[in-house]
Amino acid sequence: MASFPKIISVDDHTVEPSDVWRNRLPARFHDVGPRIVRAPVKDMTFAGGRFAPTMGAPGDDGPVADWWVYEDLCRPLTRLDTAVGCSRDEIRLEGITYEQMRPGSYSVPERLADMDLNHVQSALCFPTFPRFCGQTFTEAADRELALLCVRAYNDWMVEQWCGPDAQGRLIPLIIVPLWDARLAADEVRRNAARGVRAVCFSEIPPHLGLPSVHGDDWDPFLAACEETGTVIAMHIGSSSRMPSTSADAPPAVGSVLTFANCCFSLADWLMSGKFDRFPGLRVMYAEGQIGWIPYILERADVVWEENRGWGGIAEKVRTPPSELFARHVYGCFFDDAAGLRNLDAIGAGNVLYETDYPHSDSTWPRSRQVAEEQMAHLEPATVERVVRGNAIELLGLTAEGLWPGA
Image (cartoon, rainbow, N blue to C red; front, side, top):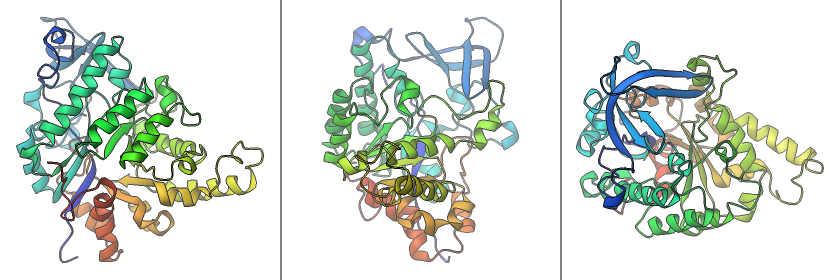
């Protein structure tokens, strides 16, 4: 293409600055709220889909990292959190400090500059320390403090990360108190009132000890999302469990299978009856890629047609799953030539583009080149739709692709 449309990335990430919660929590929580401690890494493993770091004591031997400390949780910043700017051979499982990461990971001006380098106009960013659906706070013992932490993060996200300095180019994505669906609904409405149109949720809530989408537990939250036009954004790993095959499988196994939880989750949603009950609801699968979608839709339609009598869905799923997908679901990808070759079977209106900055899988600073190579067979109007048009419509952006609430 002589010119390529500016990218709207629906899956990037922010590494929260060290003062996010200290600046927003009441003074009595400063010593117990999330805070950064610089300490050695005693041990760090990532096997069987589980990340397990151990913090050393000050003065111990070992590489030093910046750790988020909150209740019993000690979680280091890692090179996998922010790998852009490093060669592939330098990206290892290791703890790092803020000084060792690219400033665009946590600083708005530097983020905008790195977006310019990558032909990206606007970006929706998932959390790091709260994890991909805020489950860090769901797992906390002190619910009063946890709720304050959720609200503090959202205030920082809307007012600072996506505030005036971002020029409308950073699109807010909030977290909610997942332990209470009514509180979650309240937080959706609170933020929708200031223009937020996206909320994090878990791909498979039972992995977090939460109800599944098959019952009515989540209905207050889903009703609030439908009422406000808030899209439910589910990132791979938002169930705190990456796909794997055994306890000793290396991380590479899970990296190949990152789409698998999205696949399971989509089957849940299509067979839950929620899309029939909440016809305005929309969900998206961040970083799940799209190549797997055609077969799942084909199989889901067969099951709906032939097995619904004994399959437990006859009374609640009134519409063929492929039609539900077309109306309610968006797949997101950053590098998926196979999926783009089968775009007609997915639906050009149900696909969103992403760059995954600053993670190790990110296509930065070559996202435009990757897209041009993989979309060369598509009509310009289809490219425009995939790269930015669908995101503008889904997230309520201006015609120029900017967040109107900035």
